[in-house]
Image 1 (cartoon, rainbow, N blue to C red):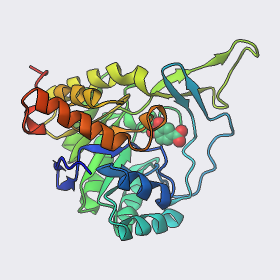
Image 2 (image 1 turned 90 degrees about the vertical axis):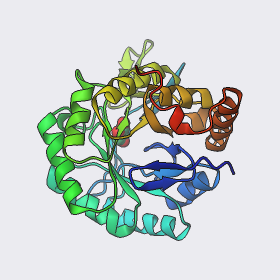
Image 3 (image 1 turned 90 degrees about the horizontal axis):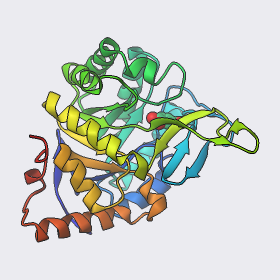
Length: 302
Ligand code: DHB
């Protein structure tokens, strides 16, 4: 197992590759498997107060350069999910609990319950591209983002990360609102709003019609967002969007990311993608005479 010790706020990771929310992260078994196969930490599926079925199928389709999904925030609800977190902690998994809510009260209750269950940090998902009342309606409003972050921060003692959408006019402003609220790090980006139409049936393929695009196609968008955010905030950034290789991770770091999240690449490569990316990062650093990850962070951002 490759060790590249990384620290985000007070959270210590064995390496800077983290499983992104929404992929193989609904039950403890698959999360333990991914952690043991090399991820530095795991972000859970976004969890809400009550169980949600999600949207009917089709809810995910593979396109030429990535995945298009609109799952509809399916999750068992926090009370049910607690037992999964407890299993993760028994297996010593570093786990970041992703939560979503429709207002600051809900986020605070969820954050406290996740902390009580034992997560090492929280990721506030304010950026789901299509769930009415939960995603962008909250995550695009500077005042709401600041208020939710402030209230969650004052109710928990673990690090709090805020996940930001690329589907915004002024991304750095939202990141600054999270920073003002006391966020310990920014996670950028969530999926990009997108759509696929079947020309034979002349209808959108996803049952929800509009979904979020992830995978290789969105990497340049993520790089640009991290680059812009890095100029405007003084807290660490976790880069996510289209990372498949060590070189992709290094590109995000040069834009300003201190760590990265990986999701769709599990499908284009395999579950050992974390270990492989760490090896590729190490090899690249050796060839290019870098000794520490810190020497890479933000170097392209003059
Ligand atoms: C879902 C999609 C997202 O991009 C997100 O941030 C949260 C949830 C979903 O469809 O379940």
